[in-house]
Amino acid sequence: MRDVPDFEEPRPEPRPQLYGRPRIDPAERRTRPLRVFLNEAEERRLREDAATAGINRHDYIRALIAGHKPQSRAGGHYDPRLLHELNAIGNNLNQAVRDVHAGSKRQRDWEALRELLEDVILRVALGPESEQDGNVH
Image: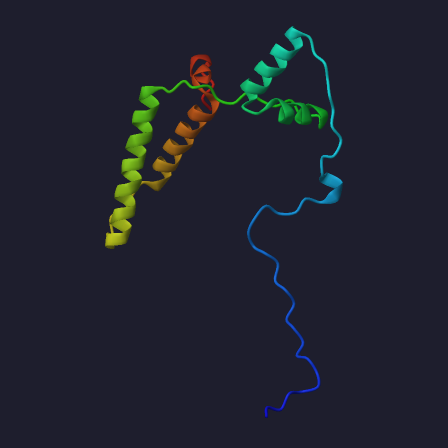
């Protein structure tokens, strides 16, 4: 017969599950429904403003309540010249990385490349209107 101890081994603390959505703090749970009646023009404006901001109507209203005016997201305009410049910069970066990995001793003008990247990023962020105004920097 086996010797069985009179006491039970302490069990390790259960580990928290690492998958799924994190639990929401009870104070942050949204438990208060709100039903609002709008006329046609108000509903259209809400729908358009939310779409312009790139968020749904519910999140748009929550942002307004929090005191934020959601900004419109960038439009769908893509300048082919800008895409060409970005492609050229990407090619330069790939060549530089390849040189570094190959142990090349060639010196690159990293400052000029950084300035070029900053210029392109500003042009992308500000959009085509900023070029027309001359406000790229």
